[in-house]
Length: 440
Image (tube, rainbow, N blue to C red):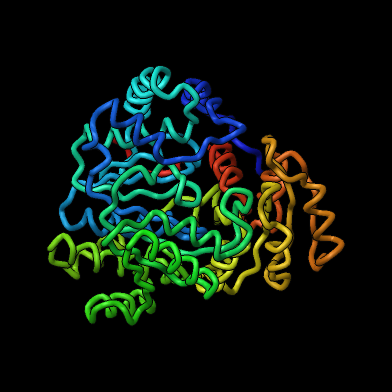
């Protein structure tokens, strides 16, 4: 008799319960402006906290992976690194890492309480993102890191992370996203994102469309920054050889499709180290790349003997990266079972139209218990009316969807994708650790 898979008993949610009051600080009407955080931090500590040596990385897709590459390479060169990213998958402490390791939950809560107490007098309407960003910068300052790698939250111009003074800025990619805040064209979005650059500093740009290029140039001219539209050809000979090595080697934690992000990261390292007068050690660069880990992005886990691939693709461009990664992976010859969930404000229709029906054994549409989640019935309806090339299921309860997916075609990989929030909930429900074997 074949035993059916059942989800394990959930672990206690002590961290989320203690953090709940801070999550509730997210406002419906966001007051934009990096100046708010500059003002808050300058009064909590002093302006030194805003002048930590830093790289600021923005973009529509690939910014987290690029941050991970840059941080790992810098760390391999002997510097104590701070890494700030968002959002988190399960626990907020994932956002704040020192030498690649998330700070402890206790340390986060202690620092956050201090920042929150002071902000109630100085910035009483601070959002959760402003609070945790301020907390991260205070942690990095107090822990005396050598270098900060910081991921932009949303856009660039008015984002809280733009309160720091980066030595180098990076834009990985640009696509239509958050148009209600950033603008309804690639040009406008590029203009906004390019405001993370600084006068007389380099702005490294990945592969972007011509319309976005014009937006970058427009803002760079206003600021006086120096845009570098990078490619493999802008790398020096030694770094070019590294790209060639990882384009053919299996000695690589990420699928090969992340090479565009790697090229952007290596260009960033090349210009940054030149400005800092640090000699690039090729062996250390290679080790940094090999050790890079970015959870939730083509993240393969073994659950009860089954290969489960978590990929936080939340828009059509991200899903294209996933499909290319799958086709270049060891799973490429196999079909997969897909569980898909999306938020209402994402381009999920465009994403679903990309589905390779010849690769999918079955697809399960589901939703998560948050207001922004698209109804599974809407996802399933669109699929059946416009695609409908394989077996599909509409299962509103995501826990039931997970159990159903685990019990379908067990010999095939199970792919779970469509939303960062969804990936976080699913990993938590499977009782997985985001960072395996890592603790402060």
